[in-house]
Length: 493
Image 1 (cartoon, rainbow, N blue to C red):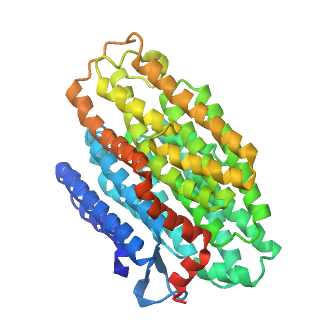
Image 2 (spheres, rainbow, N blue to C red):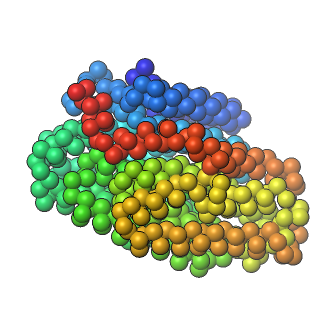
């Protein structure tokens, strides 16, 4: 059963290698990719239920047991995020068939798509800090290719900035790993947690904790390390933008989840207080951007930054309600952000513009698109009973329990700003008089709309069925709150 934990990484690797040898058979690549995604969803669903019933699953790669070898660890948090990743991957693949374009498809789009999933799933499942760096690099190398695929001027310009930022971040990551190893003599995350407790958290470990926050904060776009994100995510085509917006920042957030609950939790008055302030500032910066722009892509991109701040704030609270709320919210945000990017992509294709002032009147010719967007907008803002409500409510309860009323106020304010920003898209994009003669055939719109409808439907089920999901999410939060559960599972103590 423990071998199951590595299949979500091996399966897309196997698929990607096969697709490389089918470069000229685009239709076959499409259906192999869809089949692979369906298998990936089945495997990750089975993984979630296995972890729920049996506890954390671990696999020592090459039969080397922890802490001497690389270990793959499937706890409930990692398993839920892997399942969400595979669902989003399938939806974006289906949308890509009608939107990415033949030129990009012919230049290894589908193999590189699979390689990005390897990096994302591997980052969630690894129990080794250096291996986390390796999977980060796999993910980033795939994202470099997807970012430049097509070779437009804006893609080439923004890819240069994106690569420079990530090369610097990766270099700093290696430095932090080296410093930590020099002090503790291990890179296994469970054993790191043990040894940090044994050395009584000297000042150098607090410095290293902040160093890792810089590394993961840069990848997760936390204030003040977010400047690269709006331009880099704006440049690629909509399916790639949806993939980046739903998954890449979440890997950085997950790394903060893992390290700040398992490894760097001994000096919370300092480290988690910094985390809380950065989260608040991240929310505020994202809110300013979401209010400032008329460009639909920029509005949703800055809503990514708001969500990053909300999730990080829940982690900083470091109690059961805060962590449970953050887990619910990260799953919700991954689903609904992917759906919103796909939906605004359809709006842009119809109106041939990403400026709201050039849209209008879309609801009459495309009512299904309009009402799907409306439901997604309510969910993003956390309106009950949709998926964003329960997570945000628990984060607020956690903040109240801790007495962080400033953070509570900022999170509540962000909900109003998020609602205003997405309702602005709905009002100006779908109501009023059409600014152009919309000629895109309804059948073409429906083909692109189906994947977004699937994601919104899953999001609705996630919101309405929060009570059913709660045992899984609660199990994930228990592991974060009680590092001994993770340590005993990995080190077999």
